[in-house]
Length: 238
Image (cartoon, rainbow, N blue to C red):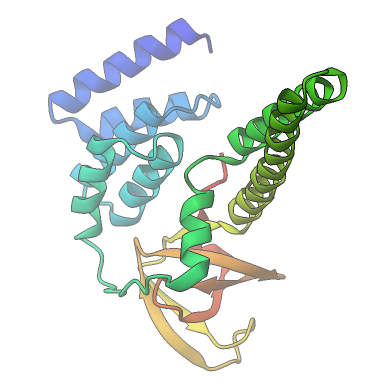
């Protein structure tokens, strides 16, 4: 399906949505998604249609996917707040404190690619300044070039460390949404193990391990447990 066709279908879906035909609009939006067309706008509109149909888990799921592509979009953030009000589970977020919080906040000021680019630029500065130091005849210029070149090298290593940390955080960040109306979270990855707690549709979790058809999840309040693969849907699956 061509880009022009997808654009036409998208506009038709928008018209259906505006007329209150949410199911028909959703079918149109989904047909675009099935052609491997991904955008924050498409996910946002799919989420809106699900929200209007009171589909709790799908609405939150697609709002979250839209946020992955546009993390600071005010309209998405506003709508997902309404959708989260439909969920049952009230999970208190435990904030990070201390040095680890400072490092994480500093790392998150840029994405991995940008930190890597900064480190490369700083290494180039180091090389140029070192050459200036090596070939300069003036003592004062040599001193200035030496100090600034060393500073550039140190900053390059710091930027590289942040790049690796950013990459590590991104790899560890494996969010998922509970799709089962009610899911039993087990203490071990098997049906015979005891139930640790229950979760309900629309709750966001972090996947931290996988064993066969089970995933170990962690909640924002620090609780962990094992959930069946069938009960959740990974957000980063595009």
